[in-house]
Length: 428
Ligand code: AMP
Ligand code: GLY
Image (cartoon, rainbow, N blue to C red; front, side, top):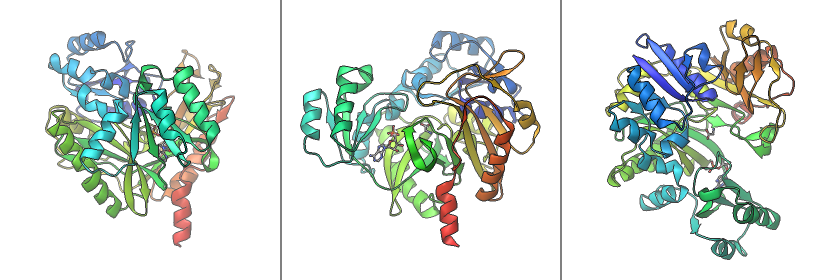
């Protein structure tokens, strides 16, 4: 089988690594890829947005399966374009990707199918936003409708936050057309959980429930980032909670999408708030989460290429689907200053050593190789993943391994997994 993966993050490094483990995979390419994807496959210098060139490449190389890592090409219709050329591709069509591409679309679908989510209002302009927020009790959340690189949810705690949000949206025009519509929704209390369903539109399988760590610093302080670490399975995702997620979220959403004529295939990422054992949807994404992928994919025992190909062909084959009975943790090493401004080009040492360690998995993200050295090249530089028999062991071991990696400005959280570990301590 010949595979093309699209994207260039730690998520894509993980996907390329796992797919390259399959006996059936003979060639694997990544466009545009990074220094990590180059360790397991061949990078192709084509951007995620260049659909014509990607299609041409897939045709020339007789690619059997294309896997799209990131949301923008999905929302822009890459799957429809590949389908037009009869090329198998894993991911939702443009109309199904609206679940992530338009928060208004997702909210309306949830209202219609009674999926638990925060009460909300839609605003089409500044006057309406000011009207809705005037006198509204804090905290609440303002969200722009369209894609905003994970920065489109603004938690409003006070008048200053509100003034700043209005300024960013309507004066700085920071979100562009993504903010043509804006949602105001109630603040949900609870603990966050990421649940991934691989689906052909009707049938689905769940990966290990994971927990991300969005804030930059320990104790969930500092600004929101793309994610500073993750672990799975998160004990918060008990069998009872997952059953509710299936019954109240996944099944109604798949039914709703089918009834709208936009059956959802690919990975449905449910971003949830769990409160008193009940799931509430914060958002949907239509691709694998990063960094969650860096733990949930290594926890899959089965052949991922077979699984994703079966979905791309419209018939999920979950026979023999198996997860490792292990706990995984991923700690992200970032550049100093991330998620704000940071410098690039710092020499990284210890990568080869860690690759040889055998126990830790290294998923490079914002890293490039200049032929001599590995250099930092982005905000999230790499993820170090360890799987072990207990979360505690995995965490301790991951923090040992990351000491091997050195570069100027190495920034990471020292408390990945703390919620689950605190729970374990409390339970004993
Ligand atoms: P989103 O871009 O929708 O994933 O939101 C980013 C982050 O903002 C989430 O991971 C939550 O931490 C927070 N958030 C978003 N919506 C809500 C909400 N309704 N209540 C509480 N926190 C929220
Ligand atoms: N981990 C958050 C995301 O992938 O959106």
